[in-house]
Image 1: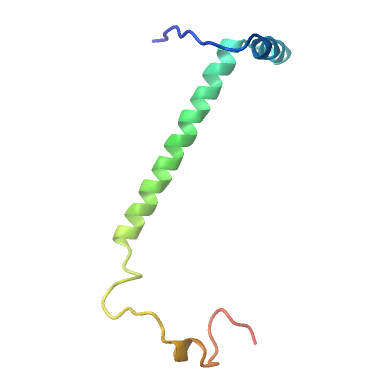
Image 2 (image 1 turned 30 degrees about the vertical axis):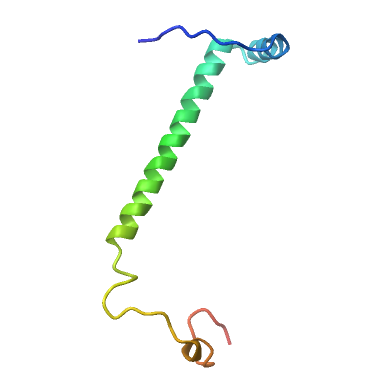
Length: 87
């Protein structure tokens, strides 16, 4: 179901949007609807990604599990080869 919406918009901006809409062979109404649709989709996508990351953090056993600890300063700077160093 579609509903009508009244917007207050500056006359100069409205004139420019009408020209742009005509160039794109669409209507101001369709442009506004498309903009709002994309905005909602982007926010929904961000929310879904955020929820997936939080779930991954909660379910992860990679950190904070039994026996996990940060390396000591001596271990970090021991000079022993590490996966992130190339010799």
